[in-house]
View 1 (tube, helix red, strand yellow):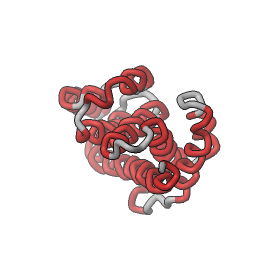
View 2 (cartoon, one colour; view 1 turned 135 degrees about the vertical axis):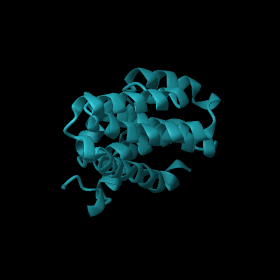
View 3 (cartoon, one colour; view 1 turned 120 degrees about the horizontal axis):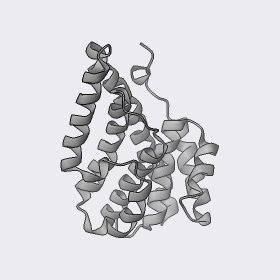
View 4 (cartoon, rainbow, N blue to C red; view 1 turned 60 degrees about the vertical axis):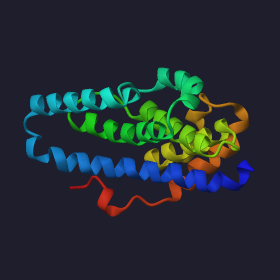
Amino acid sequence: QEWIVMIPLALIGGLCGIAFHGFGKLTRWLTRPILDRPVLLAVIGGLVLGGTGMVLPYTLWAGESQMTEMMTIWKTLPLGILFATGIVKLFMIQFCIGTGWRGGNIFPVIFSGVCVGYGIAAMFPGLDPVFCVAVVTAGVAGAVMRKPLAVVMLLIMCFPVDAIVPMCAGAFVATMLPVPKAFMMID
């Protein structure tokens, strides 16, 4: 049953990854008027992060520690919270970096994919949650990183070995999705 939905799951993950690129462009547009004021940018970034964290607490951290917790509590979270956490986390990665905060995007992107994958598993209880999370996470990371083999090599540390084929499908399908020119960071 999972193999039938593998490509749609990869596309969902890929679309989330494409949204990540759009969030970067949106952040650049929002911060352009005050780019020459780094302290103000950082304060705004901190206020937005803190406010977002009050509503969606899992958007506050990179996600590597929270993934373990998410594996045990995802069934207790409302469907909307899982999806919102995944999508808003993608925005917050771009917004925090765009306002001068430091950090990377690999683990936060993976965590976003995990949240969206669990959201899909919660929406369709007949699907294997690990399968959903593996494909969607590979799709998100594939669309963000644009290097499917690197994505699979990275995610093999996070998922069981039997998830390699679904992760390959997710990463390769998502990488084939074009990033719209409007989302490109070129000014």
